[in-house]
Image (cartoon, rainbow, N blue to C red; front, side, top):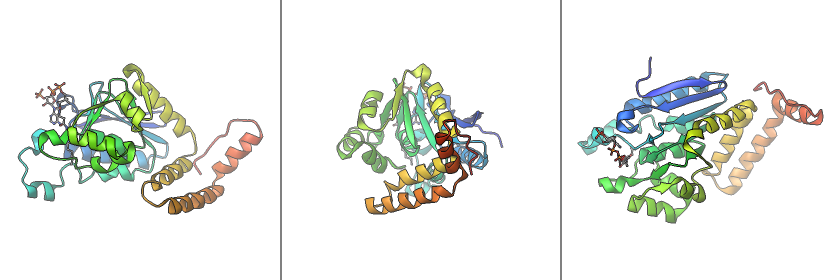
Length: 258
Ligand code: HXC
């Protein structure tokens, strides 16, 4: 089935999803989120893909949930329809690493989507915010939970309660953003980092992603136990034998994802 709200492409071992509702600043609706879930299913099933990049346009990563679509909702429309969020967790359950390459606005659901990715690279024109309060509502796809984990309580309260936007420099300083690039280099640099990740052992990258995510889902004790078990398990990998042998033989490793 063709995609109508996103563009899907591969660049070497990297899967690229471009959010594409240009007239609405990539505002998110059910159709877009369903298509994203389908694209992730396909990339996860493709053995050749080792990392995924999600991006938008130079003006907007995504300006939030589609306000026109939800403005007239009743409680039951929202509750039964589970607008936007019925397939939202698919991004969270993606086992391969995902980079969000954010230029322009990442607001509301757009900021929440970027925060579900494993790291955010921002263009110098990026603007992040949870401005739902200005619409008489609140973040509904993780903003009140993931933002404080990323930037701390005080700044999360500031952004959610005032609705103000945070620029790329502030977002990097606060820990939301991993790297900033000039807008014209953003995608190239995100793809380069994704290509680097995809060149390593995929099972190891998946183990690292799972372990880092444990830091947000468990106590330190449990997280450390989890990491130790996975570290021990990695000795079962051919890629561990190859990686360490290559180091000792002073050559580049050739990983086979086993
Ligand atoms: C629907 C949107 C939209 C949105 C922009 N547009 N954001 N349409 N939903 N979230 C549309 C505008 O209506 C307009 O359409 C066109 O995109 C260009 O937008 P402008 O406002 O003319 O551009 P500009 O002046 O540059 O301002 C850009 C902007 C502003 C700062 C991004 O559009 C804005 O504040 N958008 C809303 C941001 C927001 O509140 N997001 C949170 C949504 S709630 P026309 O047809 O006039 O050209 C949410 C909750 C998630 O995300 C919970 C999920 C469960």
